[in-house]
Image (cartoon, rainbow, N blue to C red; front, side, top):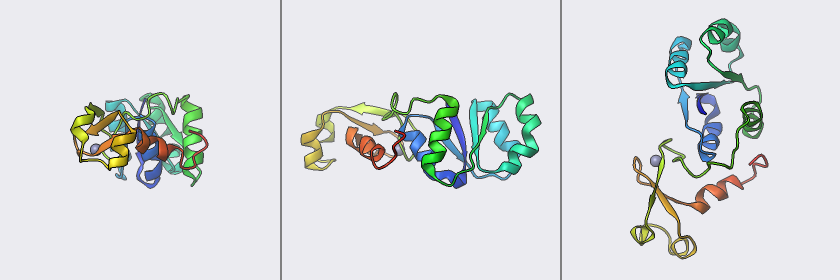
Length: 154
Ligand SMILES: [Zn+2]
């Protein structure tokens, strides 16, 4: 399941990526364009703009574009509602996408990260991945710690 999310919900975008769901922002005010991207890339529209849904309800339905209106300001509520509505498993494929780039994370050998990650991390973890786009290295702790940062839904 892939998403296109209202720019005002930046935190939700990161959380969906942490959970492994391909998610992009939209910052356009052109509703036609957003619907075109959603339709072309098979993305679900998540928005806080009730006017959008109201105005385009018919078009969204005709084009078969799934969408969800999120009213809450709280990222926890937004994530909870999205997960419940689309039956997402937020743990299943976590640790598969770069939080910043939305690109798949690639496994790298432990010896290749020597000197590139803090020493305690190198000692503690054996599994490392990196993003080919931004070159950032991640290990289990990076995603898991963020997950456990206080979102009880995860
Ligand atoms: Zn990246």
